[in-house]
Length: 234
Image (tube, rainbow, N blue to C red):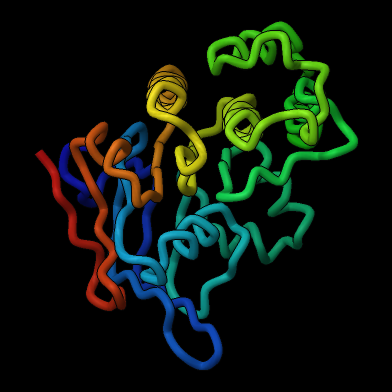
């Protein structure tokens, strides 16, 4: 990510963000402008607000103050049209890999991916979904239910589901936490490649040194983020 600066077309743009919880500020970001197509890691100590930041960008959490734009869309304007509009925007635009896989237990692996296509109003593209599973080392598991998978396999299915709609913004929260070195490298390869193929912005929240080593830019949230987001860039 060459220079996290204001750009004409922004993948992510935040100004004056404040998120409160229990009467206290848990996340403040003065300004963050990430170009479309950029890739980077979000790091910081536990409790600094990494997961909160991803939730705001995914439209899952409404901040008390600030302006947040994703793919040139003001999230407050979308939210003002109601939850259905926000759900549609999220399904089409954001691919979220949460810390917990949160797969549909009644559906098999393939149908978990096809459900994401359905919710976004997109055609199934079954062959493309199967190819994505293959890239993540999940070939042959497409008819298994989540409970029949290991924790690491569930995490990779959640990753595939986040990528299947080719979103403009990919947000991954500790995506390698349950993966060994080989599967972590494979997952990161697919994340980065799919983002590049789609021209998507990729932000990965992590404590994992294996992840940080993959990105030239790290967005570092301090223990109590209050003065913007310091950035390490090439």
